[in-house]
Length: 80
Image (tube, rainbow, N blue to C red):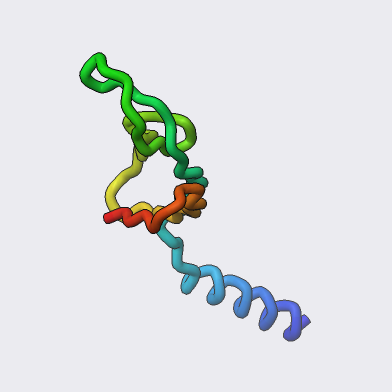
């Protein structure tokens, strides 16, 4: 009986020290060239997942954002 009470106390005390983590948002972006017409004149531009402008990231303060970027361009690509 004493062992059951001890295990119950260990389980309850462990639940008190559990910490939640801020949520993670995961995205996959494929960067390619494509034809865009932002000013009515067709020209080559950079697309993200086939979109220009690129996709929106809807997040909340303290969200952790993980973006896997696949560069299918023939040159380096920098995001800031």
